Image 1 (cartoon, rainbow, N blue to C red):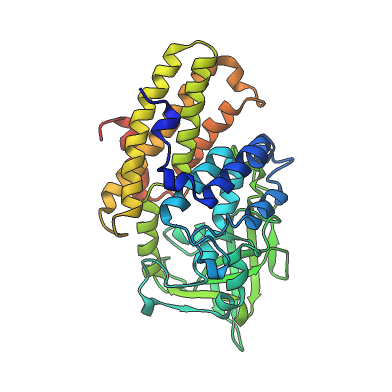
Image 2 (image 1 turned 90 degrees about the vertical axis):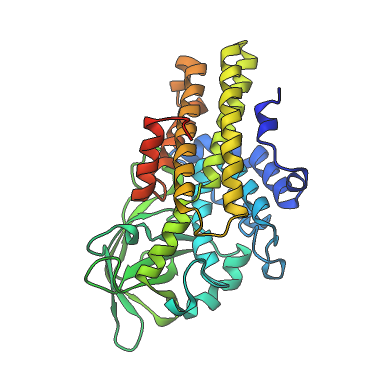
Length: 387
């Protein structure tokens, strides 16, 4: 019978890709050993590790070679994300924010009709740095997914630009990144009306912008996640990245969020490899058996997720995608807790990674969660393994 590592092994051509070999080396030698510190609010994600990832081209895996990236396939990109998330959840979460402004800096916006958006000057201005990873960016946009009254308003400024007012509850990587993409809403009605304005501003205090202290998070405390208070903050015309129809963006976002996150698959893979390893080391055959049983299930679901991500056009089989994401999230939580059970009491020590992985598994339930995803997750918990 294959080992868990063999069950989750990528195809040889993916494993041999320079981006994958570079990510494997950095995760094994640099990022993974620092993961306990990266989770600790007192220490946190090491900025030098972000620079090392950027220097290796690992913030730009799918970016064309001509723009400073690897120009790799989506399957290669998925593998690098799985490896990073399995090595250090906090570092992965800071890095993944960069993909939003980077992706919006060039090419059509996935899922949004071209007539529904206008690019601002910041897209061309920051495109080279974002594409190559020499300029890093975080985001403060989660609030625009919430229904009801907009959390951050954008009002036109005399002479051009915008004035932003409101509260952006979640901004990850404050002080770690060079720029922050802040989203605001042009309508006083509901979030589904009007337009969204995305501004790309330096990650620093400025008149009308105040960052709160790091949030007291139960996991990934070292990501420097803060709340931004905006009080009539001026956004210059050349700081505007994007101006997009709100409903069109929300529709495209619902398609994106239905997909399984490769990072969740990376954590699932890591905890099952560790469960099997622990079982062998401590002569606990029941742990090995659990790892292999969960691993077979996980590898099968992962193959389905990869097929939907790579081979099926975005927007098709949406409910199936969401159901699969819910099932994989449930299986990741179950597998992480199986590892805690196998390790026993010492898993509760902060020096042991098992408790951190269990907390990270819970995080994957709520990251990018929508009402549809919440329903599929709860169904998976109520009826596990019935897919």
